Image: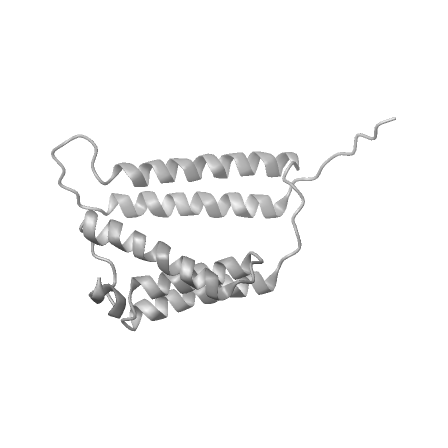
Length: 157
């Protein structure tokens, strides 16, 4: 005998859907204030439209699942992981702001995020982060000629 228990709407799911929709609206508003003089096909305004449309679809899907009560059960919050990731972001912003450069800031963020996800090899993660950050820096700064924050390591490259 199956019990057909009525599911309740998920309030947190509606809040998340609202936040996703608000983020999409901020992107559209910011795009409307952008002055782009493009004379050819697709310009830089195409990607924000794609991202905003994706966020609207995510918001709609999340709201529908929240209304039906079909969102999965939430896992308990791991405050340590949140603090590690936020600390990595703060370190990234501070290091770039103080002139430390893109590469070491990104390596620290990588190691903090890996630690937050349960990895315990911090020194190895810093090295992996450095290698990845150098690769990204070379790709963006040298190949695509985009400017990234420069510090001591970037001046040596």
